[in-house]
Length: 381
Image 1 (tube, rainbow, N blue to C red):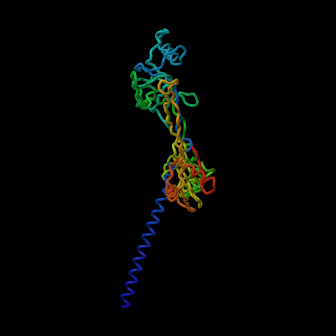
Image 2 (tube, rainbow, N blue to C red):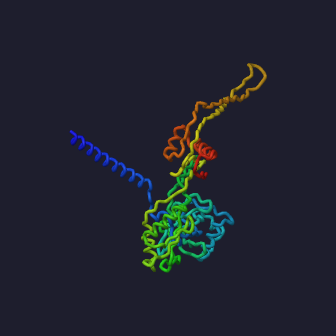
């Protein structure tokens, strides 16, 4: 009997040990999932590798009587006359009254290291044109911030919106005065930038943070087995080229951008009072605080009445205003207690238990912050 009892005890101990190990593994896996590391390439930008904005002024022709009104002295009329003069045509004043032409602004983004090729452009009406559907953009130079021409755009304008007007009603869907030309510009000039001659790389954090910058530097140093990376501020990490990557900056960037980094973020609450949107970070904490919220509703009802004189009497029929004002204040709201150091999920559940809407929740969060119980920064958009 003693042997059997001892054997049962050993079996139970082994079973409990197995269960504890499985539970510990589950907790560790859950904690690792909550960490949610991100790739380095999704957290930083390489300094110098960026897009360049281009802009140009042009004319869209071929519209179905939906272009600009060519009044005397309008910039559309001047542009049309100037273009025709360059083509050897000298129109008269009466010959430039068409409503099939519209002045437009053309914008595009020149990608980093863009070579001879094509890019997409956006076309937006500048005058009083009502629709760009069916129009064709004439040759339009696209200039950079330095005033140089980097691309030339031309092509059929694609408009996703539409407009229809009748005698008594009109309908508009989308924005018919703006459109897009896929591959509508040819790159004529390249932006000079040589990465092969660089002896260091500067990484710029998209969300500056001291802790994240240090983690990035530590991960890079651990990968290259050298102290090549050092953070200079919350938004910048400088990486010197190790000996193994001399003359090969592209290989270094390709290797380190796949490193897994766990970004850190400050406790912050974002509030958009216009739309009633509230966004809270995972690190938001609240000290123990009691909250009570009451609703006050004021209802004003207008019921005008008609006052008429007696039959065959002197007087006039008049409308007498009648106003009914009712105040409804819900006083059955109880205090709700939010415990100290609660998680974001518990905080949301506690605030939802108060039965308040987003507008009231914004006021509650601001009141908690004013009381010094909200351990987070509130940013109002």
